[in-house]
Image: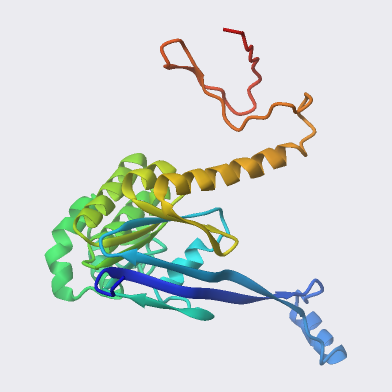
Length: 302
């Protein structure tokens, strides 16, 4: 594949951290001084932890690709490596185009400044010129829906208003590559729909989207491909439906394994289920089984 067709190319990317274990760490200055005097050459135990290992993939221009996996799988670390926030320990990454990152909504906002001032400040941090911000300003404000409070310090904003304004600034950055981490997990339902619609517009516009989310329905509707991370390595890369199935099946297997150790359940365990849908003859849902709600299932022969 030629570089003209690529937006992101990663080869053998790895990121390692050093974890220190010290179960007798001092909690006061006096304890620290005494310990240093008594054991001047003592060293805490260290462990090398690979957050990412041998991660390789290509993403073409105009693709919308999801990055999915359980918590701790390495998704956010990979996005920070791609955004050049975190330095990788090994491997190489080539980015073909301007990158816009929305990793932590609201990063760079100054609590004492007004919403208007923070739009210009955050836009500059994200790499927008002052002219770009001016041209996009009305669209940003309209998307965020905070017109009445634009000249109010953001420290007085509700969390929803704060998030909407921060996302609006990042989403209107004219970048060739948009990297988004868990933005669909914040805000109310209407805001999440607007976020999804905006990212869909970005993808239709021919720009590249790399999205991390636990919302499988949103991923299925927005993305054409997905990468499943497990333990810092790629477990699957390909069709989004198959990736979701791979991720969900793994989670279901872990869930069933956890249930085996529970002592508040009765039965022989010959049949286990991870989800139950109860429907009528016409196929419509007739009942929703709530968590921890007891119910009986009767299986009749045809």
